[in-house]
Image 1 (cartoon, one colour):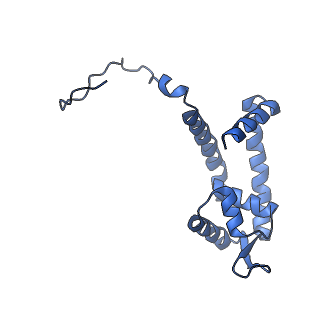
Image 2: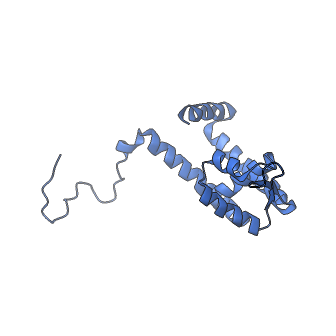
Image 3: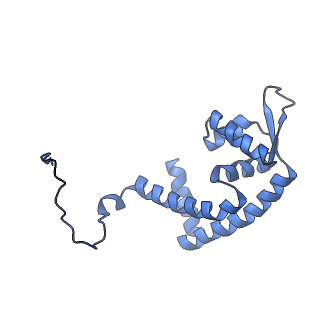
Length: 158
């Protein structure tokens, strides 16, 4: 469909006050995934703002806690974060006293990542908050079975 360029805006075909038609996007998987992701991230941001944590910060802290002594490059790779961006993220966490980079005994060119006591304390608190947020999502999905199904479907896409 083409329309002539007249310099005038197209005439409105909707009645004022009517809802925007979204049927053209409602069946697009990528669009719906992005909308769901935005909803979850907005809730995360509003809850975790008081802790000064963004989703990437939280993920890094969790991975370091679960894998103490691993190299920066390994953590960055698992999260899909570019090296330069990860270095900046690590500087922020290190400056806040949450993580420390210790030269690796096996490879002096690499840094082994560890949580500080302050980082561990913050993560313990953050995990409690995140667990409650995650349970809310599970409840909204309809329970553990729906959660398992959703995760399996998402795994098929990634």
